[in-house]
Image 1 (cartoon, rainbow, N blue to C red):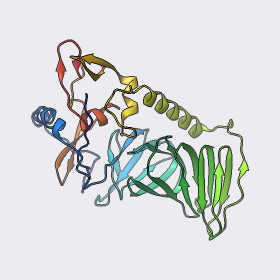
Image 2 (spheres, helix red, strand yellow):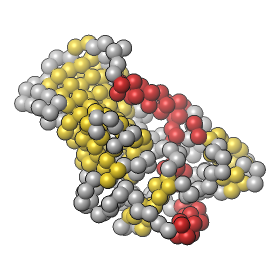
Image 3 (spheres, rainbow, N blue to C red):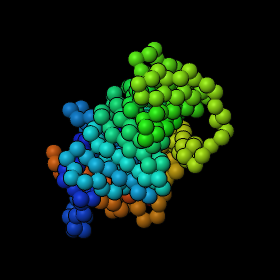
Image 4 (spheres, one colour):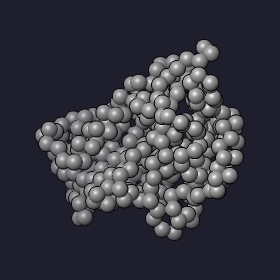
Length: 316
């Protein structure tokens, strides 16, 4: 996989599952057709680039604005403005937004996406969330709770916990978040600080908290943050992948960069890999079917650029 070009944003309408199954003959034809066409498709800019589900545990669900009911969320499912997401007490989910922002959910959380980058606006009703912004994260990110609005700065990792009463807790592991609530002045919460806010009241002054005291959600957040950092750092400078491209961090642990005919390519190391074989097609009303691959790296490699086959290295 070489050059980076984005496709049109997918959306769902009236589906009974996260993807619609297509007969195998159609799948083979579609794979061949897309292999030829994707390299020539460029993001036109008239639609916001979608986010994607970059990790999901058990019992993650999604519902689009035109969907009749909730459907199970699978890895690499596109996430559009207006979508609602939910995980139960046993579940976890991570959503990756273009521009270098990730949102993690656990503990019976429910979230809706009001808008996509460059201005990410999220509405959280209940549960526990982490918002991580990379140091080169672009645009604005705001998460609203029943008690306040929280603006998260770039290079920040912040946790938000919301009770059924709407009472909200903001804990910043690193970086900075700004709480707006209760008609009072903004409250800045910095690294190692925590603030509380109840609906209709001003946020409490920040106080220090023990960042070494972790629950299971904290541990998962730390592990995902570590994998993200390793993956992004491993992308070579000469690779034609701009900062904040969705899925770039998944390349490092699943393949290697090789030079073929004087050009640098990314090569998956999975034995027997063939593009567009392991996954499903999701119907997009405006432009047809979009591939939702089962491999973590398939969101980037099957939505951007062009595959080619090399007799020595296989698929590039």
